[in-house]
Length: 456
Image (cartoon, rainbow, N blue to C red):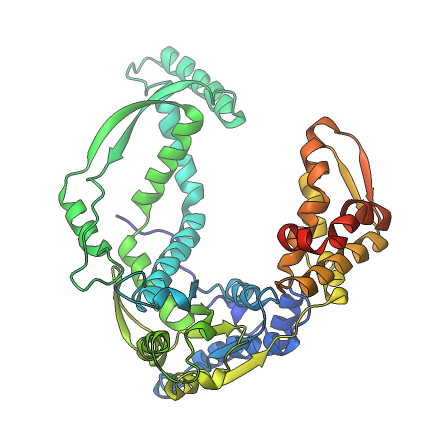
Protein backbone atom coordinates (compact mmCIF):
# COMPACT_ATOMS: atom_id res chain seq x y z
CA UNK A 1 0.00 0.00 0.00
CA UNK A 2 1.14 3.50 -0.68
CA UNK A 3 0.62 6.46 1.56
CA UNK A 4 -0.83 9.75 0.48
CA UNK A 5 -1.81 13.05 2.03
CA UNK A 6 -0.48 14.53 5.23
CA UNK A 7 -1.68 13.20 8.54
CA UNK A 8 -2.93 15.78 11.00
CA UNK A 9 -0.75 16.62 14.00
CA UNK A 10 -1.25 14.79 17.28
CA UNK A 11 -3.24 17.69 18.65
CA UNK A 12 -5.58 19.56 16.36
CA UNK A 13 -4.55 23.21 15.87
CA UNK A 14 -7.94 24.19 17.30
CA UNK A 15 -6.91 22.57 20.56
CA UNK A 16 -3.74 24.65 20.69
CA UNK A 17 -2.76 28.27 20.73
CA UNK A 18 -5.96 29.66 19.22
CA UNK A 19 -8.29 28.06 21.80
CA UNK A 20 -7.76 29.53 25.24
CA UNK A 21 -9.78 28.27 28.23
CA UNK A 22 -12.11 31.22 27.71
CA UNK A 23 -12.57 30.26 24.05
CA UNK A 24 -13.24 26.62 24.98
CA UNK A 25 -15.92 27.65 27.48
CA UNK A 26 -17.49 29.92 24.85
CA UNK A 27 -17.61 26.99 22.38
CA UNK A 28 -19.21 24.74 24.99
CA UNK A 29 -21.74 27.48 25.78
CA UNK A 30 -23.04 27.19 22.22
CA UNK A 31 -24.37 23.70 22.97
CA UNK A 32 -24.66 23.38 26.76
CA UNK A 33 -26.59 25.66 29.10
CA UNK A 34 -25.03 26.62 32.44
CA UNK A 35 -22.60 24.37 34.38
CA UNK A 36 -19.83 26.98 34.25
CA UNK A 37 -17.66 25.25 36.90
CA UNK A 38 -17.54 22.00 34.92
CA UNK A 39 -16.83 23.86 31.68
CA UNK A 40 -13.95 25.76 33.30
CA UNK A 41 -12.45 22.54 34.67
CA UNK A 42 -12.46 20.71 31.34
CA UNK A 43 -11.27 23.84 29.50
CA UNK A 44 -8.22 24.06 31.75
CA UNK A 45 -7.58 20.33 31.34
CA UNK A 46 -7.66 20.66 27.56
CA UNK A 47 -5.42 23.73 27.54
CA UNK A 48 -2.95 21.95 29.83
CA UNK A 49 -2.53 19.30 27.15
CA UNK A 50 -1.37 21.93 24.69
CA UNK A 51 0.86 23.50 27.36
CA UNK A 52 2.45 20.12 28.09
CA UNK A 53 3.43 19.71 24.43
CA UNK A 54 5.27 23.07 24.58
CA UNK A 55 7.57 22.22 27.50
CA UNK A 56 10.93 20.50 27.15
CA UNK A 57 10.87 16.77 26.40
CA UNK A 58 12.70 16.10 29.68
CA UNK A 59 9.81 17.47 31.74
CA UNK A 60 6.98 16.60 29.34
CA UNK A 61 6.68 12.97 30.38
CA UNK A 62 6.48 13.96 34.04
CA UNK A 63 3.39 16.13 33.57
CA UNK A 64 0.30 13.98 34.05
CA UNK A 65 -3.29 15.10 33.40
CA UNK A 66 -5.49 16.15 36.29
CA UNK A 67 -8.42 13.77 35.94
CA UNK A 68 -11.88 15.09 36.77
CA UNK A 69 -14.93 13.80 38.64
CA UNK A 70 -18.25 15.43 37.70
CA UNK A 71 -20.95 15.17 40.35
CA UNK A 72 -24.55 15.65 39.30
CA UNK A 73 -27.89 14.01 38.57
CA UNK A 74 -28.63 12.40 35.24
CA UNK A 75 -29.45 14.76 32.40
CA UNK A 76 -27.56 17.81 33.65
CA UNK A 77 -24.91 17.76 30.89
CA UNK A 78 -22.00 15.64 32.18
CA UNK A 79 -21.68 13.41 29.13
CA UNK A 80 -22.36 16.20 26.67
CA UNK A 81 -19.58 18.36 28.15
CA UNK A 82 -17.05 15.54 27.78
CA UNK A 83 -18.21 14.66 24.26
CA UNK A 84 -18.11 18.25 23.03
CA UNK A 85 -14.69 18.71 24.60
CA UNK A 86 -13.35 15.75 22.63
CA UNK A 87 -14.74 17.18 19.40
CA UNK A 88 -13.11 20.53 20.10
CA UNK A 89 -9.78 18.82 20.69
CA UNK A 90 -10.05 16.50 17.69
CA UNK A 91 -9.36 13.78 20.25
CA UNK A 92 -10.31 10.08 20.36
CA UNK A 93 -13.18 9.68 22.83
CA UNK A 94 -14.97 6.72 24.39
CA UNK A 95 -17.72 6.57 26.96
CA UNK A 96 -18.05 3.54 29.20
CA UNK A 97 -20.27 2.80 32.17
CA UNK A 98 -18.28 1.68 35.20
CA UNK A 99 -21.00 -0.82 36.09
CA UNK A 100 -20.00 -2.87 33.03
CA UNK A 101 -16.89 -3.88 34.94
CA UNK A 102 -18.76 -5.43 37.87
CA UNK A 103 -18.91 -9.19 38.39
CA UNK A 104 -16.10 -9.78 35.93
CA UNK A 105 -16.12 -13.28 34.49
CA UNK A 106 -19.90 -13.50 34.60
CA UNK A 107 -21.46 -10.48 32.90
CA UNK A 108 -18.71 -7.93 33.42
CA UNK A 109 -15.95 -6.66 31.13
CA UNK A 110 -12.22 -6.41 31.61
CA UNK A 111 -11.34 -2.81 32.51
CA UNK A 112 -8.63 -2.68 29.85
CA UNK A 113 -11.35 -3.04 27.21
CA UNK A 114 -12.03 0.70 27.45
CA UNK A 115 -8.44 1.38 26.35
CA UNK A 116 -8.85 -0.98 23.41
CA UNK A 117 -12.06 0.86 22.54
CA UNK A 118 -10.08 4.11 22.64
CA UNK A 119 -7.58 2.65 20.17
CA UNK A 120 -10.46 1.70 17.84
CA UNK A 121 -11.87 5.24 18.08
CA UNK A 122 -8.44 6.68 17.26
CA UNK A 123 -8.03 4.39 14.24
CA UNK A 124 -11.46 5.43 12.93
CA UNK A 125 -10.69 9.12 13.46
CA UNK A 126 -7.27 9.09 11.78
CA UNK A 127 -8.50 6.99 8.87
CA UNK A 128 -11.45 9.32 8.25
CA UNK A 129 -9.15 12.35 8.26
CA UNK A 130 -6.77 10.70 5.82
CA UNK A 131 -9.65 9.58 3.58
CA UNK A 132 -10.89 13.17 3.39
CA UNK A 133 -7.48 14.17 1.94
CA UNK A 134 -7.50 11.29 -0.55
CA UNK A 135 -11.14 11.29 -1.62
CA UNK A 136 -10.52 13.68 -4.55
CA UNK A 137 -7.92 11.54 -6.38
CA UNK A 138 -9.86 8.39 -5.46
CA UNK A 139 -13.06 9.74 -7.01
CA UNK A 140 -11.19 10.59 -10.21
CA UNK A 141 -9.90 7.02 -10.36
CA UNK A 142 -13.44 5.68 -9.78
CA UNK A 143 -14.76 7.86 -12.58
CA UNK A 144 -12.13 6.48 -14.95
CA UNK A 145 -12.89 2.88 -13.95
CA UNK A 146 -16.62 3.39 -14.47
CA UNK A 147 -16.02 4.96 -17.87
CA UNK A 148 -13.82 2.00 -18.81
CA UNK A 149 -16.68 -0.33 -17.86
CA UNK A 150 -19.18 1.66 -19.91
CA UNK A 151 -16.86 2.24 -22.87
CA UNK A 152 -13.74 0.04 -22.82
CA UNK A 153 -10.40 1.62 -23.81
CA UNK A 154 -9.86 1.91 -27.57
CA UNK A 155 -7.72 -0.70 -29.28
CA UNK A 156 -8.07 0.57 -32.87
CA UNK A 157 -5.43 3.29 -33.45
CA UNK A 158 -7.28 4.79 -36.44
CA UNK A 159 -7.62 8.57 -36.00
CA UNK A 160 -11.25 8.70 -37.09
CA UNK A 161 -12.19 5.91 -34.71
CA UNK A 162 -10.32 7.59 -31.86
CA UNK A 163 -12.10 10.91 -32.35
CA UNK A 164 -15.50 9.17 -32.29
CA UNK A 165 -14.47 7.24 -29.15
CA UNK A 166 -13.32 10.39 -27.39
CA UNK A 167 -16.61 12.19 -28.18
CA UNK A 168 -18.61 9.23 -26.86
CA UNK A 169 -16.48 9.08 -23.73
CA UNK A 170 -16.93 12.82 -23.08
CA UNK A 171 -20.70 12.42 -23.40
CA UNK A 172 -20.69 9.47 -21.00
CA UNK A 173 -18.57 11.40 -18.51
CA UNK A 174 -21.09 14.26 -18.46
CA UNK A 175 -23.96 11.82 -17.97
CA UNK A 176 -22.04 10.02 -15.24
CA UNK A 177 -21.33 13.23 -13.33
CA UNK A 178 -24.98 14.31 -13.58
CA UNK A 179 -26.15 10.96 -12.22
CA UNK A 180 -28.10 10.13 -15.39
CA UNK A 181 -26.50 6.67 -15.50
CA UNK A 182 -26.95 5.72 -11.82
CA UNK A 183 -29.58 3.06 -12.60
CA UNK A 184 -27.54 1.37 -15.34
CA UNK A 185 -25.97 -1.95 -14.38
CA UNK A 186 -22.26 -2.70 -14.72
CA UNK A 187 -20.19 -5.71 -13.76
CA UNK A 188 -17.47 -4.94 -11.23
CA UNK A 189 -14.83 -7.06 -9.54
CA UNK A 190 -14.98 -6.95 -5.76
CA UNK A 191 -12.37 -8.33 -3.38
CA UNK A 192 -13.50 -10.85 -0.79
CA UNK A 193 -11.33 -11.67 2.21
CA UNK A 194 -11.25 -14.72 4.44
CA UNK A 195 -14.08 -15.72 6.76
CA UNK A 196 -14.93 -13.70 9.85
CA UNK A 197 -13.52 -15.59 12.82
CA UNK A 198 -14.09 -15.05 16.53
CA UNK A 199 -11.35 -16.52 18.69
CA UNK A 200 -11.79 -16.85 22.44
CA UNK A 201 -9.10 -14.99 24.34
CA UNK A 202 -6.85 -17.12 26.54
CA UNK A 203 -7.19 -14.62 29.37
CA UNK A 204 -10.92 -14.19 29.00
CA UNK A 205 -10.46 -10.48 28.29
CA UNK A 206 -13.39 -9.14 26.29
CA UNK A 207 -14.23 -12.78 25.52
CA UNK A 208 -12.99 -12.38 21.94
CA UNK A 209 -9.37 -12.06 20.81
CA UNK A 210 -9.92 -9.93 17.72
CA UNK A 211 -6.22 -9.65 16.96
CA UNK A 212 -5.74 -13.41 16.64
CA UNK A 213 -8.95 -13.64 14.64
CA UNK A 214 -7.66 -11.05 12.18
CA UNK A 215 -4.32 -12.83 11.89
CA UNK A 216 -6.00 -16.12 11.00
CA UNK A 217 -8.36 -14.32 8.62
CA UNK A 218 -5.40 -12.80 6.76
CA UNK A 219 -3.98 -16.26 6.16
CA UNK A 220 -6.81 -16.92 3.71
CA UNK A 221 -6.11 -15.58 0.19
CA UNK A 222 -8.19 -12.65 -0.98
CA UNK A 223 -10.30 -13.42 -4.00
CA UNK A 224 -11.95 -11.31 -6.65
CA UNK A 225 -15.43 -12.07 -7.84
CA UNK A 226 -17.69 -10.35 -10.30
CA UNK A 227 -20.94 -8.67 -9.33
CA UNK A 228 -23.59 -6.97 -11.44
CA UNK A 229 -24.59 -3.77 -9.63
CA UNK A 230 -26.12 -0.40 -10.40
CA UNK A 231 -23.62 2.38 -11.08
CA UNK A 232 -24.83 4.20 -7.94
CA UNK A 233 -23.75 1.19 -5.86
CA UNK A 234 -20.62 0.51 -7.92
CA UNK A 235 -19.41 4.04 -7.23
CA UNK A 236 -19.37 3.37 -3.48
CA UNK A 237 -17.70 -0.05 -3.81
CA UNK A 238 -14.98 1.24 -6.10
CA UNK A 239 -14.37 4.37 -4.00
CA UNK A 240 -13.77 2.29 -0.87
CA UNK A 241 -11.43 0.03 -2.83
CA UNK A 242 -9.47 3.02 -4.17
CA UNK A 243 -9.20 4.52 -0.68
CA UNK A 244 -8.03 1.19 0.79
CA UNK A 245 -5.36 1.02 -1.90
CA UNK A 246 -4.05 4.52 -1.13
CA UNK A 247 -4.08 4.38 2.68
CA UNK A 248 -1.02 3.10 4.50
CA UNK A 249 -2.60 1.32 7.47
CA UNK A 250 0.74 0.92 9.25
CA UNK A 251 1.05 4.68 9.26
CA UNK A 252 -2.55 5.08 10.37
CA UNK A 253 -2.01 2.70 13.29
CA UNK A 254 1.16 4.46 14.41
CA UNK A 255 -0.55 7.85 14.31
CA UNK A 256 -3.70 6.56 16.00
CA UNK A 257 -1.86 5.00 18.93
CA UNK A 258 0.19 8.18 19.39
CA UNK A 259 -2.93 10.33 19.32
CA UNK A 260 -4.78 8.10 21.77
CA UNK A 261 -1.82 8.24 24.16
CA UNK A 262 -1.40 12.02 24.04
CA UNK A 263 -4.93 13.27 23.42
CA UNK A 264 -7.35 10.43 24.25
CA UNK A 265 -10.32 11.04 26.56
CA UNK A 266 -12.11 8.24 28.44
CA UNK A 267 -15.43 9.16 30.05
CA UNK A 268 -16.23 6.84 32.98
CA UNK A 269 -19.92 7.19 33.70
CA UNK A 270 -21.72 5.90 36.80
CA UNK A 271 -18.49 5.81 38.80
CA UNK A 272 -20.61 6.19 41.96
CA UNK A 273 -22.14 2.76 41.30
CA UNK A 274 -18.80 1.09 42.08
CA UNK A 275 -18.15 3.13 45.24
CA UNK A 276 -18.47 1.17 48.48
CA UNK A 277 -20.46 2.35 51.48
CA UNK A 278 -20.63 0.95 54.99
CA UNK A 279 -19.27 -2.51 55.63
CA UNK A 280 -17.53 -4.10 52.68
CA UNK A 281 -19.48 -7.30 52.26
CA UNK A 282 -21.30 -8.91 49.37
CA UNK A 283 -21.71 -6.56 46.44
CA UNK A 284 -19.47 -3.91 48.03
CA UNK A 285 -16.54 -6.30 47.74
CA UNK A 286 -17.23 -6.62 44.01
CA UNK A 287 -17.39 -2.83 43.69
CA UNK A 288 -14.07 -2.35 45.44
CA UNK A 289 -12.57 -5.00 43.17
CA UNK A 290 -13.63 -2.97 40.13
CA UNK A 291 -12.02 0.13 41.62
CA UNK A 292 -8.76 -1.75 42.17
CA UNK A 293 -8.90 -3.01 38.58
CA UNK A 294 -9.45 0.55 37.35
CA UNK A 295 -6.60 1.97 39.43
CA UNK A 296 -3.57 0.78 37.38
CA UNK A 297 -5.18 1.85 34.10
CA UNK A 298 -5.93 5.33 35.46
CA UNK A 299 -2.49 5.58 37.09
CA UNK A 300 -0.74 4.68 33.86
CA UNK A 301 -0.33 1.26 32.31
CA UNK A 302 0.57 -0.31 28.99
CA UNK A 303 -2.41 -2.05 27.42
CA UNK A 304 -1.99 -4.40 24.50
CA UNK A 305 -4.34 -3.59 21.62
CA UNK A 306 -4.64 -5.17 18.17
CA UNK A 307 -2.75 -2.12 16.84
CA UNK A 308 0.12 -2.29 19.33
CA UNK A 309 0.78 -1.30 22.96
CA UNK A 310 -0.97 1.83 24.22
CA UNK A 311 0.19 3.69 27.32
CA UNK A 312 -2.47 5.41 29.42
CA UNK A 313 -0.19 7.77 31.39
CA UNK A 314 -1.46 10.85 29.54
CA UNK A 315 -4.99 9.78 28.71
CA UNK A 316 -7.51 12.15 30.33
CA UNK A 317 -10.09 10.32 32.46
CA UNK A 318 -13.34 12.13 33.22
CA UNK A 319 -15.52 10.27 35.71
CA UNK A 320 -19.12 11.14 36.47
CA UNK A 321 -21.88 10.07 38.81
CA UNK A 322 -24.94 11.24 40.68
CA UNK A 323 -23.44 10.34 44.10
CA UNK A 324 -26.84 10.26 45.80
CA UNK A 325 -26.21 7.25 48.06
CA UNK A 326 -22.42 7.59 48.29
CA UNK A 327 -19.80 10.34 48.21
CA UNK A 328 -16.61 10.67 46.16
CA UNK A 329 -14.77 10.03 49.44
CA UNK A 330 -16.29 6.53 49.47
CA UNK A 331 -14.05 5.57 46.57
CA UNK A 332 -10.84 3.84 47.62
CA UNK A 333 -8.20 6.46 48.56
CA UNK A 334 -5.81 5.47 45.76
CA UNK A 335 -8.49 6.03 43.10
CA UNK A 336 -9.61 9.29 44.72
CA UNK A 337 -6.05 10.54 44.41
CA UNK A 338 -6.12 9.98 40.67
CA UNK A 339 -9.14 12.29 40.29
CA UNK A 340 -7.96 15.49 41.97
CA UNK A 341 -10.45 17.82 40.26
CA UNK A 342 -14.06 17.61 41.44
CA UNK A 343 -16.88 19.76 40.09
CA UNK A 344 -20.54 19.72 41.03
CA UNK A 345 -23.13 20.28 38.35
CA UNK A 346 -26.32 22.12 39.29
CA UNK A 347 -29.75 20.55 38.96
CA UNK A 348 -31.89 22.00 36.18
CA UNK A 349 -35.14 23.91 36.72
CA UNK A 350 -37.74 25.68 34.60
CA UNK A 351 -35.57 28.65 33.63
CA UNK A 352 -32.75 26.32 32.58
CA UNK A 353 -35.19 24.31 30.46
CA UNK A 354 -36.35 27.48 28.69
CA UNK A 355 -32.75 28.24 27.76
CA UNK A 356 -32.05 24.63 26.75
CA UNK A 357 -35.07 24.64 24.45
CA UNK A 358 -34.01 27.79 22.60
CA UNK A 359 -30.36 28.81 23.04
CA UNK A 360 -28.09 25.94 21.89
CA UNK A 361 -27.38 25.55 18.19
CA UNK A 362 -28.88 22.06 18.36
CA UNK A 363 -31.85 22.99 20.57
CA UNK A 364 -34.95 20.78 20.54
CA UNK A 365 -37.05 23.61 19.13
CA UNK A 366 -34.70 23.88 16.15
CA UNK A 367 -34.57 20.10 15.75
CA UNK A 368 -38.34 19.57 15.68
CA UNK A 369 -38.87 22.61 13.46
CA UNK A 370 -36.37 21.24 10.93
CA UNK A 371 -37.80 17.71 11.09
CA UNK A 372 -41.36 18.81 10.32
CA UNK A 373 -40.23 21.27 7.65
CA UNK A 374 -39.25 18.22 5.61
CA UNK A 375 -42.99 17.41 5.46
CA UNK A 376 -43.95 20.99 4.61
CA UNK A 377 -45.26 21.71 8.12
CA UNK A 378 -43.97 24.96 9.64
CA UNK A 379 -43.81 25.15 13.44
CA UNK A 380 -43.78 28.48 15.25
CA UNK A 381 -42.86 28.23 18.94
CA UNK A 382 -43.93 31.28 20.93
CA UNK A 383 -42.15 32.43 24.08
CA UNK A 384 -45.22 31.50 26.13
CA UNK A 385 -45.31 28.04 24.53
CA UNK A 386 -41.66 27.39 25.35
CA UNK A 387 -42.23 28.44 28.97
CA UNK A 388 -45.20 26.08 29.24
CA UNK A 389 -43.12 23.17 27.94
CA UNK A 390 -40.36 23.99 30.43
CA UNK A 391 -42.83 24.20 33.34
CA UNK A 392 -44.36 20.81 32.53
CA UNK A 393 -40.92 19.19 32.21
CA UNK A 394 -39.83 20.66 35.55
CA UNK A 395 -43.07 19.52 37.21
CA UNK A 396 -42.68 15.99 35.82
CA UNK A 397 -39.15 15.84 37.21
CA UNK A 398 -40.43 16.87 40.64
CA UNK A 399 -43.21 14.29 40.72
CA UNK A 400 -41.29 11.40 39.20
CA UNK A 401 -37.61 10.56 38.81
CA UNK A 402 -35.49 13.63 38.10
CA UNK A 403 -33.90 12.87 34.72
CA UNK A 404 -32.86 16.45 34.01
CA UNK A 405 -32.95 17.79 30.46
CA UNK A 406 -33.83 14.35 29.10
CA UNK A 407 -37.36 15.03 30.32
CA UNK A 408 -37.67 17.66 27.58
CA UNK A 409 -37.38 14.96 24.92
CA UNK A 410 -40.26 13.05 26.50
CA UNK A 411 -42.47 16.14 26.81
CA UNK A 412 -41.74 17.39 23.28
CA UNK A 413 -42.41 13.98 21.74
CA UNK A 414 -45.72 13.71 23.62
CA UNK A 415 -46.67 17.27 22.71
CA UNK A 416 -46.06 16.80 18.98
CA UNK A 417 -47.13 13.17 18.72
CA UNK A 418 -50.32 13.91 16.75
CA UNK A 419 -48.63 16.56 14.60
CA UNK A 420 -45.78 14.21 13.66
CA UNK A 421 -48.19 11.40 12.79
CA UNK A 422 -50.39 13.54 10.54
CA UNK A 423 -47.60 15.70 9.05
CA UNK A 424 -47.42 13.83 5.69
CA UNK A 425 -51.09 14.72 5.09
CA UNK A 426 -50.78 18.37 6.15
CA UNK A 427 -48.00 19.72 3.96
CA UNK A 428 -48.03 23.49 3.51
CA UNK A 429 -49.62 24.21 6.91
CA UNK A 430 -48.32 26.43 9.71
CA UNK A 431 -48.78 25.49 13.36
CA UNK A 432 -48.40 27.91 16.25
CA UNK A 433 -47.11 26.27 19.45
CA UNK A 434 -48.27 28.68 22.15
CA UNK A 435 -49.19 28.26 25.81
CA UNK A 436 -52.78 27.29 25.01
CA UNK A 437 -51.65 24.60 22.57
CA UNK A 438 -49.24 23.10 25.13
CA UNK A 439 -51.77 23.14 27.97
CA UNK A 440 -54.49 21.64 25.79
CA UNK A 441 -52.26 18.70 24.88
CA UNK A 442 -50.51 18.10 28.20
CA UNK A 443 -52.30 19.71 31.16
CA UNK A 444 -54.78 16.87 31.69
CA UNK A 445 -51.94 14.39 31.57
CA UNK A 446 -49.94 16.32 34.16
CA UNK A 447 -52.93 16.49 36.52
CA UNK A 448 -53.13 12.69 36.53
CA UNK A 449 -49.94 12.06 38.53
CA UNK A 450 -50.08 8.28 38.21
CA UNK A 451 -50.37 8.47 34.42
CA UNK A 452 -47.72 11.19 34.21
CA UNK A 453 -45.23 8.92 35.96
CA UNK A 454 -45.52 6.41 33.14
CA UNK A 455 -45.93 8.70 30.13
CA UNK A 456 -43.88 11.76 31.06
